[in-house]
Image (cartoon, rainbow, N blue to C red; front, side, top):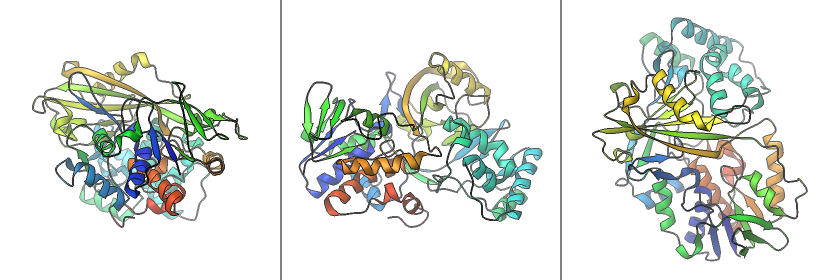
Length: 464
């Protein structure tokens, strides 16, 4: 059985890894770009600074994935290990994330509104069925937390109104409300930063997040790994994919990790569901600030920071030089910030001024004290950044994925399956692995079809 894989990100590489592991030799992987890693790639600029394509944190829901990571970069030598420090910048102060556990850091007015809202939802804790993500936020966290952080932040990161988003994707991505914990922290004025599946994480010592995927790709049979091969069409009847250079390649099964909306436009004949899918996504502008000197004490140990307010365009900033000293050429005299700005058809960003807007936002929020700190900037635009979990997403995607399978086409990965809740690096990699297990050894595709199972098993508890 000949398997063709489209896309050299974590999903495609996961499938190739598992095929090689099983000794199945009849496969080819095609990547349109000149590098491996997809959205998990990294780039080194002309000055020697490394940048990721967004704020990636490697944590795992799977023992299998852990073993692969240990294989490609070693158990310890190839990594820097971190205790997560996630913060929120609001009200001219830094507050540990998650906010609901640290509301004592807010102004008195905001603290009371948040506490009042939390107590209200405890009093009215009957079963609810929210109509959209905004209703879910208020019903789960109360009106105060919704007003001060959760509503503005989520509209900023998703770039769509929360009323248009579903809430079933949440899983382990948002800390639940624990009233006793909140009150204890408030009474004793203690910070709480230990929540979450990524409370401990590791990062490559050299070469950014992309080092993982470059090292993994190097261990695969190179004659079957094809860069700079851009697909233009998929012939269902002939079971062939065609490329911009005029060549074609036959297949028995096709694994596509390219965006689902792009895939359906390539299929010939035109599928019964058409070629224009009403699925939404957001884009991300990555602006790197390469800086002189050393980070101020207030940022010296922070990993990343959330920004819900409108005094800056970015929703998140990573202190990227804190992830590895090798992310900058000279850690004694240089440091770096990586800023993310979302865009969608309803949240326009002007490319020609986004870098300047980010710099001004960094000054407004106290990340920088002067423009003189900036050595240079780096910019990268990610067209497909986040697959948006709209209210009708499941109704659109699930039948489509099943219909494609009937045609011998499996669409998987962050944008191949269009499921944000299983769109992290470990999820995407395992979607590729589980595709191979399903098609060759009758395994279950748990990650794609049962995210609530895999996301309940993070390092704080069991792993699959």
